[in-house]
Image 1: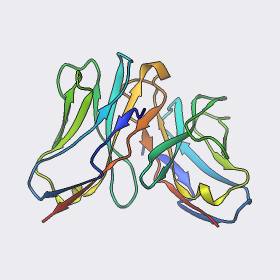
Image 2 (image 1 turned 90 degrees about the vertical axis):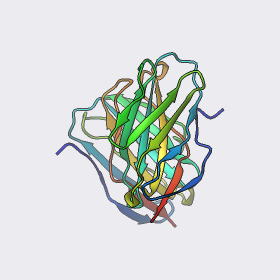
Image 3 (image 1 turned 90 degrees about the horizontal axis):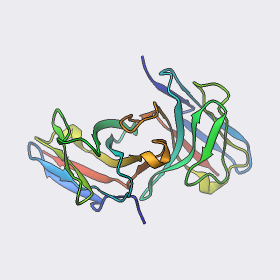
Length: 113
Length: 116
């Protein structure tokens, strides 16, 4: 089944404790992206990648890191999480093109205390 | 300036009625794509419908249609014959060629509630 898989679904952590949210897609998509969703703000892009070893900042990259060592994987790393990073996170992927819809993972609800 | 504006934070509709969710966009790019997504309370993002800037006809997918008015830069989603399962958050989004068709920019969403 074609899908984007992100883990974990729920994560509660404490301030400053490094964490990684994994994301993997099996559709051979070149493009992958991370978004965060907050009430009243919609989805905001954190980072994206157009291909292996090619990553770029989105609208809200501060406090996040990504890597794209393989085409299928695009992990999101929070080196030192803070409470303002409490949010719902989505990984998404697509082919590159005007008419290519993003395929989303099921989301990771992160709480930083 | 916001690239995607959804002016209706919430909408109510009765079952079996049609509803229009508004979306206006801002771009100087002649080539772009417009998307609508549905997010039910379970949280997943579901792709509904796509409209290209050069498409001559309005897109349709089952009960979903897009009222695309290019000169007004609007791409309203029309849901016909609403069902209880249509209750969800709906997002309009745009992909532009001058971003290399990379970034999909989202509006803030409209919450639709369908009542029996």
